[in-house]
Amino acid sequence: MQRNCSDFQIPSFARQDAYDFDAQADGSYRLFRELNQIAEEIEACRQRNC
Image 1 (cartoon, rainbow, N blue to C red):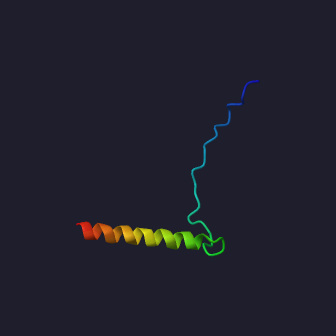
Image 2: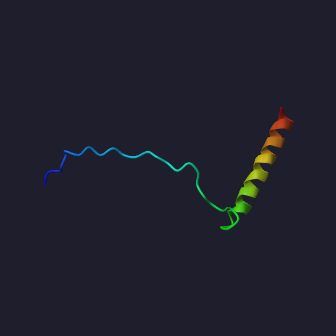
Image 3: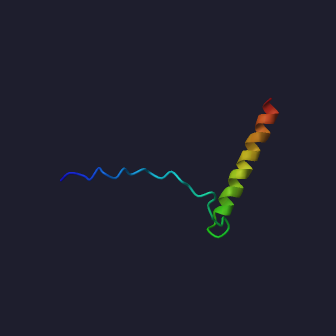
């Protein structure tokens, strides 16, 4: 069966301006805090080795 090509479909690339999430509600706050501590430790090591 042949497709109907009379209508040209354009994909939508529109995105939400912001994503609503509550980091404390799902327990990911601990993960973010740990990742931040790791980033701070890496930055401190970089500054010592300069």
